[in-house]
Amino acid sequence: MKAEVTEKAMVSFDNTQIAFISKSDSDLKKSYLLFKLIGNPLLVKYGGGLAPLGLRLGFKGLIKSTIFKQFVGGENITDCGKAILQLAKYNIGTILDYSVEGKESEVDFDHCCTETIETIHRARGDKNIPFCVFKVTGLARFDLLEKVTAKQTLTKEETEEYERVKNRVNKICSEAYENKKPVFIDAEESWIQIAIDDLANENMARYNKDEAIVYNTFQMYRKDRLAYLNESVTHGKSGGYHVGAKLVRGAYMEKERKRALERGYTSPIQDSKESSDKDYNSALEFCVNNIDCMGLCAGTHNEKSSLVLVDLMAKKKIESGDKRIYFSQLLGMSDHISFNLSQNGYNVAKYVPYGPVKEVLPYLIRRAQENTSVKGQTGRELSLIIKEKERRKKGLTT
Image 1: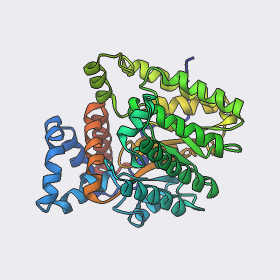
Image 2 (image 1 turned 180 degrees about the horizontal axis):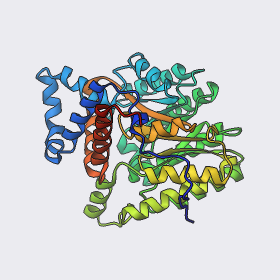
Image 3 (image 1 turned 180 degrees about the vertical axis):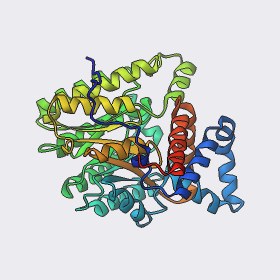
């Protein structure tokens, strides 16, 4: 299965005037300096350990005005209001993402469940917030999910604990269904993913009878995910429910390969970027071909894959604003993709993380590390910012 971009692709990502239309000269300068810093591998490598120290030494304001401002909507849902309205001015939606990580207590899991439901209530009836999202590790112990994925026998206490996990996931999905607000279940490490997939499939079967409300996430940098996507849709068709599919490349590549090497099993990660790209684009084609029984969100910062989807929609005569298909990028990244797609009438939504500065630090550190590990990501962001700064300096209109 192969998807190619035709010569008549209808969208260009070269227009930096549109890409940075929401940024003042001051904002653009700050973004330039930030991506210059993120482009320094040594700073990123050691900055992760220094950032918590910086908070303790009173540098919260500096962190909040730089990397936090670039990639995070605020410390709570209310704080995100400004980002929601700013994106909405350019017909870009917001996906509120409570990005507090690494918790392990039942109290924390219940709080995350409540917080996620609050995002659904905030999104209710608001066209500017087309989706909500959660991670299952925000609702469950990692070790428990690992044990469930490995099909190990649970103790009586663990069985009861897992029932609470299932209840939390169901509660969120039920609220999404009642409020007509689709919700993404994020993908995570391969050694806990089967548990996550099972929870996603159970709730898709329950709530997706008429349309895609619950979405599973498919990480296409895994060798097996294209086949699993096909399998999921086959099950959906036989079970009489729509499959919600958010397609991403993946966020745990180095960790996955390291664990596979240490434990002596074959890495689930694609052998090359080209293989990952090929499966991603094939997955887009598969979803478009089955769009009558699916909902699709293409979560990608890859220009070519974005154009593949644009081209596929044109070939199938699917309107750019068809609500079954969305494009998505992270806040603070790839604005040249988000804003130019939106300008051309496509449905676009930005992930807008939020949470207390201290609690969101792990997310921010991962964002910085991903930017340095993905070949060309930081350089691409910088080159576009430089191009726009020069355009403004010369007073050009395009």
